[in-house]
Each structure stands twice: as structure tokens, then as C-alpha cells.
View 1 (tube, rainbow, N blue to C red):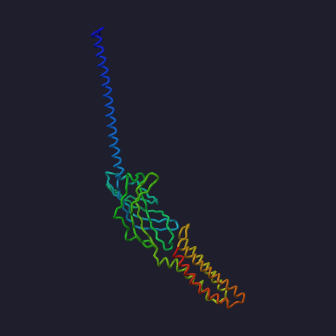
View 2 (view 1 turned 90 degrees about the vertical axis):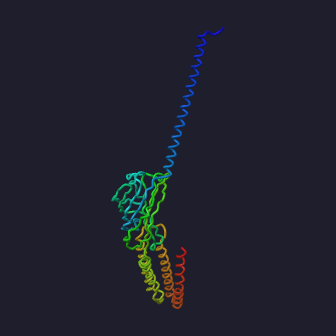
View 3 (view 1 turned 135 degrees about the horizontal axis):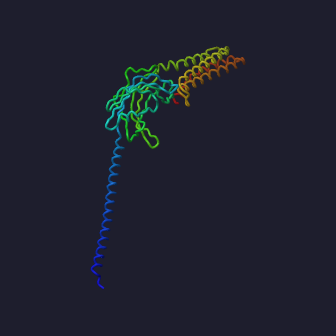
Length: 331
């Protein structure tokens, strides 16, 4: 049976409709694929831009001019400084308001803004800063007074400090009782868990004048110890005077030791002053021990033996002092 012309028309229409629908679906798929590719390409561009920003943080140049070291408090591990601080930056890369958000890590001084222009900020800073001093070589120690600052919010991927080579110390700076040493600035990186921040650090070195420290700290105890050793030139029969002189000078040495350490905070290690005093105490122990033994010989009526022992003890004394000095040099 042959199909009618109407049926042929319907079959042809249905075929065309299905072909058209299939074509529309294919076009939609192509448009979706193209849209996804565009999104991926834009994401790649943004990622590259962000990576470039991270690899090139904004640079801010920092400088300092130290005006005065007003106070050094060794007992409190603190010092008071007065200085000018300035920032130089590109205002098209970072705003002045952002630069102002810096903080001092080891202090909370007052800050007075004295100049603000495009790309430039300047402050006068004055206040106390804290650092744990090293007293290993006290009273001949050297201390570095440092100041550390960093930005509050911008990490090292966003902001990096740079030293200004014009930073320096005012020629009129003078610290009573100390000699001024080197002045240095540098930039460091400080990590907090997974974040790192750029730090600007500057510091000045103070050291004690050797002659002054020797006269004030070593000479008095040397004189006290020498006086105590005069007991070896006292006759063995006068043993009471010998022991009295030794005990009196020992008490003076102890009081001097306590006075010497009163200017520094308690430490968990021995300072040079402590080691010197240990040697002094060893000499005092030797002196008093010899005096007590001589007293026993005198009480036993062994005067000749007491005189011989006194001479031997006097000869042995320089050897003991040399051994103690060698021990200090080795330690």
C-alpha cells in the first residue's frame, strides 16, 4: 500500500523538526563550552595578576635620625630614646593612611607627626623600649639598644620595608657613663605562624669605658683582698688580729659584691663580676683556713712549726692566684 501524499508530508515535517531540535542542542552545548573557556581564561589572568602582586610588594623606605639616648636602665632592661622617623613611598601604590598603620614591637612610645606631604611621612618618636640585656661580661659588657617596627596589617607579600641610607646618629648624642659605638639599620623578616611581616630594625651600641669600669668595679675589691692578705705578715702569735682582719675584710668584700650586682637584674647565669668574686672568696677561704691552722699550732706551743707553715702558705699564695686567673681565662 502506497503512503498518501499527506502522510509523506507529515513524515518529512517530523524529520525536519527533529533535525532542527538536534541542531539547537548542539549550538547550546557549543555556547556553554565557549562560556566556560572564557571564564577559565579570565580566572587565569586574575591569578597571574595576583601572583605578580605577591611577588612585587609595595616598597616603603624607612629612615631614622637618633637625637638622644635619654636613659639606660639596666635593672629594668629598658632604655629611653628620642629620634626622628620618616617614610618615603609611592603614593600611587600605597596611601599615607596605610603607611601610618605601623607599630613598635619592643615599645610603646609617643609619636608626634611633624610633616606629611605626598609620598612622605615624618614623626618624632620618644619613649621607652625594652630588650633583655646580656650581662655575661658585666661590668665590661657591651649593649645594643635596638628599635623594631613593622606594619600592623600588611604582611610581607603586600609591603616590604627598605633602609634609607641617610639614617644616622646626631653628633651631639652623649650617654653618661657609656661610650657610643656603631649605629646600624637593617630590614628583617619576622614570621607569625603562617604569616610573615617585614621589619625595620635600627640600633646603637653602648659599651663601658674600660678604665672607668676597672676603677669602679675591680680596683676596690682588689684593695680589700690585698689588705686581707697582709695577715701573712703578722706574727703567728697574734692570731686573733689575723683572724679579725680576715673576717672584717671578708664582710667588706661581701657587701661590695652585693652593691656591685644591685645595678643589674637577677640573672640565671654567672656574670664576670660573679666569677671574679668567686676567686676572691677562694682567696679569703685560703687565708682564713691558714690563720685557723696557725692558731691551732700556737695553742699547741709549736711556734717554730707555725712560722714555717706561715712562710709556706705565703709562698703558695701566688700559685693559687695564678691558678684562679688561668681558670677565669679558660672559662
